[in-house]
Amino acid sequence: ASAGFAQSPKLVQKDTYKVGFAQTESNNPWRIAQTKSMQDEAAKLGYQLVYTDAAGSAAKQVADVNSMIAQGVDLIFLAPREEKPLIPAVMAAKAAGIPVILLDRNVDPSLAKPGEDYVTFIGSDFVDEGKRVAEWLQENKQGGAKIIELEGTTGSSPANDRKKGFDEALKEGYTVVASQSGDFARDKGRQVAEALLQAHPDADVIYAHNDEMAMGAISALEAAGKTPGKDVWVLSIDGGKEAVQAVVDGKIAAVVECNPRFGPKAFETMARYAKGEQIEPWVKNTDKFYDPKNAKDEVASAY
Ligand code: GYE
Image 1 (cartoon, rainbow, N blue to C red):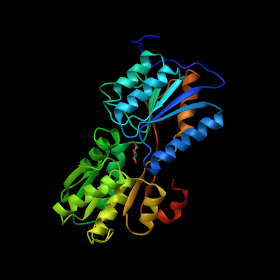
Image 2 (image 1 turned 90 degrees about the vertical axis):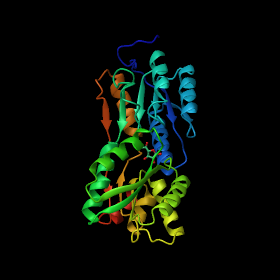
Image 3 (image 1 turned 30 degrees about the horizontal axis):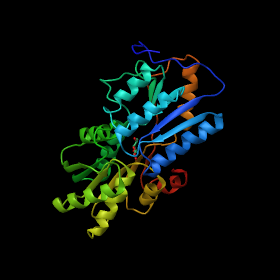
Image 4 (image 1 turned 30 degrees about the vertical axis):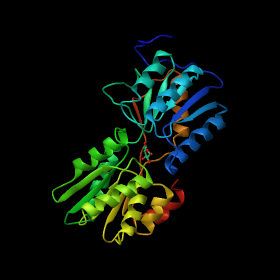
């Protein structure tokens, strides 16, 4: 096959497939739940899954995709760490005639197009997730807020969009006093929260782009002698069991879910594509919302 397909490469219908899953990292419960969901579904269908873990490196993830191409997989599920550096990987797969389905994170929409360069993006509406956090905050904490924002991985679509949706929905009196990346990681989130709390001792809200950084922020608050939920409200996105339990315990104020169980939807979309169906450019996940009203009932079903 050669480059220059007008459309994303086709997938033939077969009884079984060899499918690649290029994971971005595996250092948190969200990623572990996502990988398990993909592996379980592949096993259920009797497909061979070629799994790689880029360990938080976009360069390694590009190399991982190239190795899947060399191994001749039928299709690649890719969770692109960042929006721009993974474009060459998407284009290399296309040039090799291998369809790509983007999972959970997107690539830069001005550089690659669904239906053309890749089949589709399966994932949540991150702008809306950020917006829902801001709206809940403004409804529940009257009189304004000084907010510390812990951003996800710089250049990743969830970090870009969760910031955009949140910031755009803030009204007068609700101010982000500091915003910095904690790389979606617990310890980095704790360190950044610690430094920003020192610089802004009057901050009364921490908005973390994921649960890991929210849990890190809770440690930073407690180390600084502050009570999360009282002195400072913590808001988060992901909705893993630990964070939903923290809502029950009053340490996290509210969490927007971002469901990591992609397996069934991912392989169903692949089957629809093999059948020749026209796939929508964005297969959207819907997200629940956890706050003190429902956290107790929901915690058992959280991942
Ligand atoms: O929120 C975070 C993970 O891309 C939606 O990445 C995903 C995010 C998720 O590492 O916890």
